[in-house]
Amino acid sequence: MTQTILTVDDSRTMRDMLRMALAGAGFNVVEAVDGEHGLEVLSAHRPDVIITDINMPKLDGFGFIEAVRVDDDYRAIPILVLTTESDPAKKQRAREAGATGWIVKPFNPEKLVEAIRRVAA
Image (cartoon, rainbow, N blue to C red; front, side, top):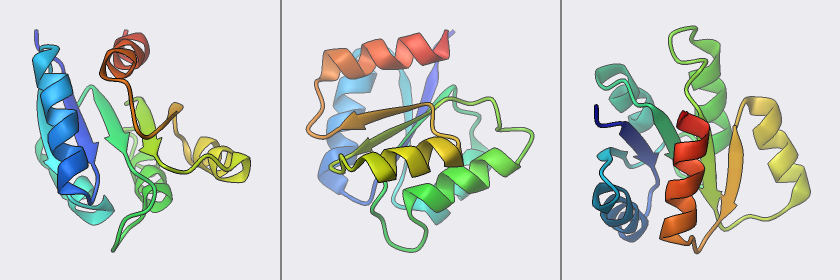
C-alpha cells in the first residue's frame, strides 16, 4: 500500500521539490501552505509521515507540531522538520514539541526518502 506524506511549507518551490522527490520514490504526496492549512489537510488525509518547515505565516512549524501532538488520533505520526534553521535551541524546541527528526535545507532527495522510510517503518 502506498504511503502518504503530508508536506507543510509556505514555499511553492520547496513543495514542488518535495513532491518530485517523494512521488518519484512512490509516495502519495498531499501539500499544505502553512501550519493552519496543514491541520485542515491532516483532518482530510491520514498521512503516514509529516514533513514541516518551521518558519511559516499564520501557524509556524512549532505550533503546528504541538497542535498535531495534542490530538490522540495523530500523536503517533512521525514528523520530520525540514528547514534552513540549524540552531540547537530550535532543534530542542522542535523535539520538545514532538518532532521525530530534523533535516536542514537544501535536502538530498535520497537521504530524505531514507529518513522517511526509517521513521515510517
